[in-house]
Amino acid sequence: MSGGVLMNGDGLDSWDVLTDPSDPGLHWTTGNIGEAVPGVQTPLSWSLWGTTIEEGMRLSMRDMGAFSRAESRLPPKGRQLCQAFYGRGALSVELLARLGDRMPGTTGQQVATGVYGEAPDTIDYRPTVKRYPFVAVAVPYQMLRIAGRLRVARATSAEFWPRQTGRVAAMGLPEALAVFAEASAQFRRCVYLQSMALFCAVQPMYDALTKLTRKTGVGDPTALAGGYGGVPETEVVADLWRTSRGEIELAEVVRKHGFHGPSEGELSGRVWREDDSPLRRLVNDYRDRPDDADPRLRDRARREERLRLEKELIAAVPSAQRPVVKLLLRRAEVSIPLRGVSKTAFLQAFDVVRATARRAGTLLAEQGVLAEPADVFFLTVAELLAGPTPAVRELVALRRQRHGEYLRMRLPEAWVGTPEPVVEQPVVAGTARVRSLTGVGVSPGVVEGLARVVTDPAFDEVEPDEILVSATTDPSWSSIMFISAALVVDIGGALSHAAVVARELGIPCVVNTREGSRLLRTGDLIRVDGGAGTVEVLEPAVEPRAVEEPAAVAEPKAVAQP
Image (cartoon, rainbow, N blue to C red):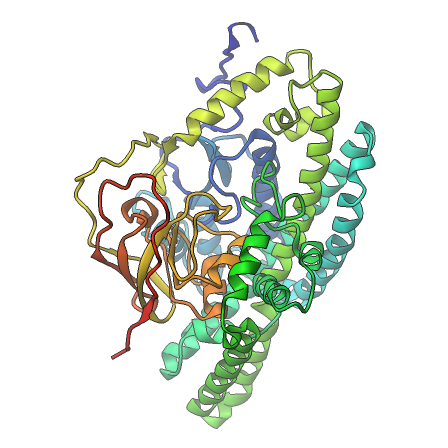
């Protein structure tokens, strides 16, 4: 690696595993991957995520009958479904559109619009019924099996996670790497099952509820797609509430939910199992809430609302159709919660990968192979398992520098070919301010309050009753969402993490604002309409925004609905 630069045939540095080539005409988006795979990944984290998503989606499409066995095999870089650009994961719109072109009841254009925001006429759509016979057999079969398969996967991860993380400190290097490989395999299985659950169960049921509510004019799908109980993210909130009331100890919360934490979708992130300090502050904030804010009361209210809407829906259809509607509602009750089951299973496996990688880094640093333990995250999975080469320190130094460069860059949410990154510049005082934003309303309600633009997922600066504004969220955000007035997120849709948790917690939420976290500023007085999907700046924050003590937080006002 003399001179520090090796080039591959695409003109890219061969040691840089965080940027892939792209065929010139391919359309890419970061919008549907950013929740699970946040921000700029380290090489170890992306080498696990990238291959896992690629294999999981292709295998699930094959097992649904939409892809042939040949199409389920990995193609070369540049034409894959999931690739990295400047450290961020992105999905190919073309391959997702191909799935839509082969599935009954949808089209490639509809899928492209859902993930890309529009249906570009430069995509080669190829609608065909050739795969319909395979899909007609495979999808019902997979729908009947997926709940049971996920229960097994969750039980496996639930036993595997505490057992292995509890003894990782005593592992030698060979054992740590063996468990690392075992956990990686469990992670891949769980992500495959999540893809299957989303394609075969969760999304079809949500689409069916959408059609039913539009046809009858009763309720909306977001209200019907919640109130089932057992949502993992709201279980975290409930346990933190119990801790704040002295019902359980914080150690019990960590024992159950310690695989969550800031940047939990990045292997180098430190989760609550390793650092519970974010939870300690949250417990204090929860303690200050009145008793009638008990999240368990909200859970009951959500369930009662859903059951009420279900009765209205059944009454709104002709009597001959009621058995079919009842069956649909019961299938939705089984299918839609599978989203959370699969996510918990793969996050637990992912945390075992994290723990064993960190242990391997410590041991390699003690041996003098790595300069410091955290350098392990700048290797790939294959490099770590094969054993670092003598040139590993130079390799790590190159990747660390490049990783830092990527952190200062910003990508568009969607692009064609290879994206043009923009280097982030500090906001200049006096710059023209945005007055309003439009996104997708996914949790109803209208609230006015002070915005808090969150860039640090440790939530050190977040105050109760602020309106959170962020590029993305992950399951650990549910803990802070509970004491927030509303949520505004750059990406997401009706079944994204932010949307699901906001509905369960009963707070307004607008997603898919695209640039809300850049255009809004901490201290802006804003109005969020979670039904209409709008965000209005009522009073901009005072400029310049110098570093200062946190201002007193205005009590949010619920605005009367017309």
